[in-house]
Length: 270
Image (cartoon, rainbow, N blue to C red; front, side, top):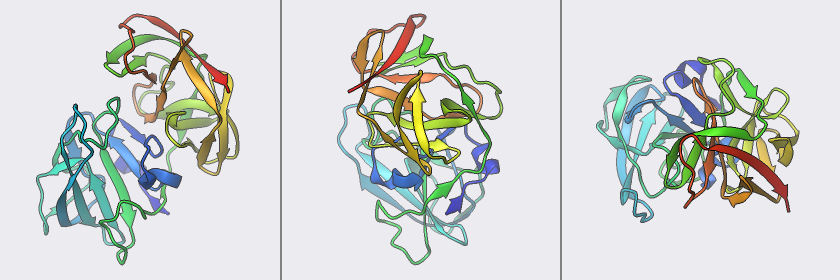
Protein backbone atom coordinates (compact mmCIF):
# COMPACT_ATOMS: atom_id res chain seq x y z
CA UNK A 1 0.00 0.00 0.00
CA UNK A 2 1.37 3.41 -1.03
CA UNK A 3 0.17 6.55 0.73
CA UNK A 4 -0.64 9.73 -1.18
CA UNK A 5 -0.62 12.20 1.73
CA UNK A 6 -2.96 15.09 2.40
CA UNK A 7 -0.14 17.54 1.66
CA UNK A 8 0.05 16.19 -1.90
CA UNK A 9 -3.71 16.13 -2.46
CA UNK A 10 -3.83 19.80 -1.40
CA UNK A 11 -2.29 20.73 -4.79
CA UNK A 12 -5.44 19.52 -6.58
CA UNK A 13 -9.13 20.44 -6.56
CA UNK A 14 -10.47 16.90 -7.08
CA UNK A 15 -9.27 13.34 -6.99
CA UNK A 16 -10.64 9.91 -7.85
CA UNK A 17 -9.29 6.39 -7.42
CA UNK A 18 -12.13 4.51 -9.11
CA UNK A 19 -13.69 6.74 -11.78
CA UNK A 20 -12.10 4.94 -14.74
CA UNK A 21 -12.78 1.93 -17.01
CA UNK A 22 -9.12 0.91 -17.12
CA UNK A 23 -7.70 -2.07 -15.19
CA UNK A 24 -4.93 0.12 -13.82
CA UNK A 25 -7.51 1.58 -11.43
CA UNK A 26 -8.84 -1.78 -10.23
CA UNK A 27 -8.82 -2.16 -6.45
CA UNK A 28 -7.77 1.49 -6.07
CA UNK A 29 -4.33 0.91 -7.61
CA UNK A 30 -4.16 4.35 -9.27
CA UNK A 31 -5.39 7.84 -8.59
CA UNK A 32 -6.47 10.63 -10.94
CA UNK A 33 -5.61 14.13 -9.71
CA UNK A 34 -7.35 17.21 -11.12
CA UNK A 35 -5.47 20.53 -10.85
CA UNK A 36 -7.12 23.94 -11.17
CA UNK A 37 -5.17 24.74 -14.35
CA UNK A 38 -3.87 22.80 -17.34
CA UNK A 39 -0.43 22.42 -15.75
CA UNK A 40 0.51 18.84 -14.92
CA UNK A 41 1.58 19.30 -11.32
CA UNK A 42 3.86 16.56 -10.03
CA UNK A 43 2.31 14.51 -7.22
CA UNK A 44 5.71 13.11 -6.17
CA UNK A 45 9.26 14.26 -5.55
CA UNK A 46 12.14 12.46 -7.17
CA UNK A 47 14.35 11.97 -10.20
CA UNK A 48 12.91 11.57 -13.68
CA UNK A 49 13.94 8.14 -14.97
CA UNK A 50 12.37 8.23 -18.42
CA UNK A 51 9.66 9.76 -20.58
CA UNK A 52 7.93 7.89 -23.36
CA UNK A 53 5.30 8.77 -25.96
CA UNK A 54 2.59 6.15 -26.41
CA UNK A 55 -0.23 5.72 -28.89
CA UNK A 56 -3.77 6.36 -27.68
CA UNK A 57 -7.17 5.21 -28.96
CA UNK A 58 -8.44 7.34 -31.83
CA UNK A 59 -11.09 9.79 -30.68
CA UNK A 60 -12.37 12.84 -32.61
CA UNK A 61 -12.01 15.07 -29.54
CA UNK A 62 -8.60 13.87 -28.38
CA UNK A 63 -4.89 13.79 -29.15
CA UNK A 64 -3.59 10.68 -30.90
CA UNK A 65 -0.70 10.32 -28.46
CA UNK A 66 -0.24 10.29 -24.71
CA UNK A 67 2.90 10.32 -22.56
CA UNK A 68 4.35 8.32 -19.70
CA UNK A 69 6.70 9.92 -17.15
CA UNK A 70 8.61 7.66 -14.75
CA UNK A 71 10.04 9.09 -11.53
CA UNK A 72 12.18 7.45 -8.88
CA UNK A 73 10.75 8.47 -5.49
CA UNK A 74 13.39 6.55 -3.54
CA UNK A 75 10.94 3.85 -2.44
CA UNK A 76 8.91 3.32 -5.63
CA UNK A 77 8.77 4.15 -9.30
CA UNK A 78 5.90 6.57 -9.94
CA UNK A 79 4.04 6.25 -13.25
CA UNK A 80 2.48 9.52 -14.43
CA UNK A 81 0.27 9.78 -17.52
CA UNK A 82 -1.58 12.49 -19.45
CA UNK A 83 1.19 15.13 -19.24
CA UNK A 84 3.24 16.32 -22.24
CA UNK A 85 6.66 16.22 -20.54
CA UNK A 86 8.66 19.38 -20.14
CA UNK A 87 11.15 17.33 -18.09
CA UNK A 88 13.69 14.71 -19.10
CA UNK A 89 15.69 11.88 -17.57
CA UNK A 90 17.95 13.11 -14.77
CA UNK A 91 15.80 16.11 -13.78
CA UNK A 92 14.73 16.41 -10.15
CA UNK A 93 11.20 17.56 -9.34
CA UNK A 94 9.37 18.37 -6.12
CA UNK A 95 5.71 17.89 -5.31
CA UNK A 96 3.73 20.65 -7.02
CA UNK A 97 6.32 21.36 -9.73
CA UNK A 98 4.99 21.50 -13.27
CA UNK A 99 5.91 18.48 -15.37
CA UNK A 100 4.37 20.02 -18.50
CA UNK A 101 0.95 20.73 -19.96
CA UNK A 102 -1.89 18.26 -19.50
CA UNK A 103 -2.84 16.18 -22.54
CA UNK A 104 -6.37 15.20 -23.51
CA UNK A 105 -5.78 11.82 -25.13
CA UNK A 106 -7.96 9.08 -26.54
CA UNK A 107 -7.74 7.24 -23.23
CA UNK A 108 -10.29 9.74 -21.89
CA UNK A 109 -14.04 9.43 -22.17
CA UNK A 110 -15.40 12.71 -23.59
CA UNK A 111 -16.96 13.75 -20.27
CA UNK A 112 -13.67 13.36 -18.32
CA UNK A 113 -11.69 16.51 -17.48
CA UNK A 114 -7.92 16.77 -17.93
CA UNK A 115 -5.98 15.23 -15.05
CA UNK A 116 -2.75 13.63 -13.85
CA UNK A 117 -2.86 9.83 -13.55
CA UNK A 118 -0.58 8.39 -10.86
CA UNK A 119 0.40 4.82 -10.00
CA UNK A 120 3.34 3.20 -8.21
CA UNK A 121 5.51 0.16 -8.89
CA UNK A 122 8.16 -1.59 -6.80
CA UNK A 123 11.67 -0.69 -8.01
CA UNK A 124 12.19 -4.19 -9.49
CA UNK A 125 8.87 -4.28 -11.41
CA UNK A 126 8.36 -3.40 -15.07
CA UNK A 127 7.21 0.25 -14.96
CA UNK A 128 6.10 0.34 -18.61
CA UNK A 129 3.27 -2.20 -18.32
CA UNK A 130 -0.21 -0.72 -17.95
CA UNK A 131 -1.25 -3.10 -15.15
CA UNK A 132 0.51 -4.06 -11.95
CA UNK A 133 0.54 -0.92 -9.81
CA UNK A 134 0.34 -1.07 -6.03
CA UNK A 135 -2.82 -0.20 -4.05
CA UNK A 136 -3.04 3.46 -3.02
CA UNK A 137 -4.44 4.94 0.16
CA UNK A 138 -5.51 8.54 0.71
CA UNK A 139 -5.57 9.13 4.48
CA UNK A 140 -7.76 12.23 4.55
CA UNK A 141 -11.03 12.90 6.32
CA UNK A 142 -13.89 13.03 3.83
CA UNK A 143 -17.32 14.54 4.40
CA UNK A 144 -20.20 12.51 2.96
CA UNK A 145 -22.73 14.95 1.47
CA UNK A 146 -26.35 13.79 1.56
CA UNK A 147 -28.30 14.21 -1.68
CA UNK A 148 -31.98 13.81 -2.49
CA UNK A 149 -31.35 13.46 -6.24
CA UNK A 150 -32.37 16.98 -7.22
CA UNK A 151 -30.35 19.93 -8.44
CA UNK A 152 -30.00 22.77 -10.91
CA UNK A 153 -27.69 22.53 -13.94
CA UNK A 154 -24.72 24.87 -13.45
CA UNK A 155 -22.59 23.73 -16.42
CA UNK A 156 -23.02 21.64 -19.56
CA UNK A 157 -20.85 19.98 -22.20
CA UNK A 158 -21.72 17.85 -25.19
CA UNK A 159 -21.77 14.68 -23.10
CA UNK A 160 -22.53 15.85 -19.58
CA UNK A 161 -24.47 18.19 -17.31
CA UNK A 162 -23.11 19.29 -13.94
CA UNK A 163 -25.59 19.89 -11.13
CA UNK A 164 -25.12 22.31 -8.24
CA UNK A 165 -26.12 19.67 -5.67
CA UNK A 166 -25.15 18.34 -3.30
CA UNK A 167 -23.44 21.49 -2.03
CA UNK A 168 -20.01 21.10 -0.48
CA UNK A 169 -20.59 20.92 3.29
CA UNK A 170 -17.24 22.47 4.27
CA UNK A 171 -15.19 24.07 1.45
CA UNK A 172 -11.48 23.64 1.94
CA UNK A 173 -11.90 20.04 3.09
CA UNK A 174 -12.58 16.89 1.07
CA UNK A 175 -16.14 15.78 0.35
CA UNK A 176 -18.03 13.35 -1.85
CA UNK A 177 -21.55 12.15 -2.51
CA UNK A 178 -22.84 10.15 0.46
CA UNK A 179 -23.12 6.42 -0.18
CA UNK A 180 -23.94 5.59 3.45
CA UNK A 181 -23.61 7.36 6.76
CA UNK A 182 -20.15 8.94 6.85
CA UNK A 183 -19.08 7.22 3.61
CA UNK A 184 -18.45 8.95 0.27
CA UNK A 185 -18.83 7.32 -3.16
CA UNK A 186 -16.26 7.42 -5.96
CA UNK A 187 -16.49 6.09 -9.52
CA UNK A 188 -18.62 5.90 -12.64
CA UNK A 189 -22.03 4.64 -11.54
CA UNK A 190 -22.94 2.29 -13.16
CA UNK A 191 -21.16 2.74 -16.53
CA UNK A 192 -17.73 1.64 -15.31
CA UNK A 193 -16.99 -1.81 -13.96
CA UNK A 194 -17.04 -0.80 -10.32
CA UNK A 195 -16.55 2.03 -7.88
CA UNK A 196 -15.18 2.70 -4.45
CA UNK A 197 -15.88 4.29 -1.10
CA UNK A 198 -13.89 6.41 1.31
CA UNK A 199 -13.31 5.45 4.04
CA UNK A 200 -13.17 1.75 3.17
CA UNK A 201 -16.19 -0.12 4.49
CA UNK A 202 -18.50 -3.07 3.83
CA UNK A 203 -22.20 -3.03 3.07
CA UNK A 204 -24.79 -1.59 0.69
CA UNK A 205 -24.29 1.83 -0.90
CA UNK A 206 -27.02 4.14 -2.11
CA UNK A 207 -27.57 7.11 -4.40
CA UNK A 208 -30.59 9.39 -3.93
CA UNK A 209 -32.08 6.91 -1.47
CA UNK A 210 -31.81 3.83 -3.70
CA UNK A 211 -29.28 1.03 -3.44
CA UNK A 212 -26.78 0.98 -6.31
CA UNK A 213 -24.26 -1.61 -5.13
CA UNK A 214 -22.32 -3.27 -2.34
CA UNK A 215 -18.99 -2.18 -0.87
CA UNK A 216 -16.35 -4.67 0.21
CA UNK A 217 -13.26 -3.06 1.64
CA UNK A 218 -12.71 0.00 -0.52
CA UNK A 219 -14.28 -1.35 -3.71
CA UNK A 220 -17.91 -1.31 -4.83
CA UNK A 221 -19.66 -3.77 -7.12
CA UNK A 222 -22.59 -2.09 -8.85
CA UNK A 223 -26.03 -3.65 -8.87
CA UNK A 224 -27.91 -3.89 -12.16
CA UNK A 225 -29.40 -0.39 -12.10
CA UNK A 226 -30.43 2.34 -14.50
CA UNK A 227 -29.91 6.00 -13.63
CA UNK A 228 -32.43 8.47 -15.06
CA UNK A 229 -32.60 12.27 -15.18
CA UNK A 230 -36.11 13.74 -15.30
CA UNK A 231 -37.31 10.24 -16.16
CA UNK A 232 -34.95 9.70 -19.13
CA UNK A 233 -32.23 7.02 -18.76
CA UNK A 234 -28.68 8.39 -18.85
CA UNK A 235 -25.26 6.73 -18.99
CA UNK A 236 -24.60 7.32 -15.31
CA UNK A 237 -23.03 9.53 -12.65
CA UNK A 238 -19.38 10.60 -12.62
CA UNK A 239 -18.39 10.75 -8.94
CA UNK A 240 -15.22 12.05 -7.28
CA UNK A 241 -13.86 13.69 -4.13
CA UNK A 242 -13.72 17.48 -4.21
CA UNK A 243 -12.06 20.12 -2.04
CA UNK A 244 -14.07 23.29 -2.62
CA UNK A 245 -17.05 22.71 -4.93
CA UNK A 246 -19.00 19.46 -5.16
CA UNK A 247 -22.15 18.88 -7.22
CA UNK A 248 -22.98 15.83 -9.36
CA UNK A 249 -21.91 15.20 -12.96
CA UNK A 250 -24.54 13.50 -15.12
CA UNK A 251 -23.03 11.52 -17.99
CA UNK A 252 -25.60 12.02 -20.72
CA UNK A 253 -24.40 12.21 -24.34
CA UNK A 254 -26.83 14.01 -26.69
CA UNK A 255 -28.68 15.61 -23.77
CA UNK A 256 -30.71 18.78 -24.11
CA UNK A 257 -30.12 20.20 -20.63
CA UNK A 258 -29.35 23.91 -20.29
CA UNK A 259 -27.85 25.91 -17.45
CA UNK A 260 -30.62 26.72 -14.98
CA UNK A 261 -32.70 23.60 -15.66
CA UNK A 262 -33.98 21.79 -12.60
CA UNK A 263 -33.23 18.05 -12.66
CA UNK A 264 -34.44 15.10 -10.63
CA UNK A 265 -32.25 11.99 -10.69
CA UNK A 266 -33.68 8.55 -9.92
CA UNK A 267 -32.31 5.01 -9.77
CA UNK A 268 -34.23 2.01 -11.08
CA UNK A 269 -33.18 -1.51 -10.18
CA UNK A 270 -33.25 -4.00 -13.06
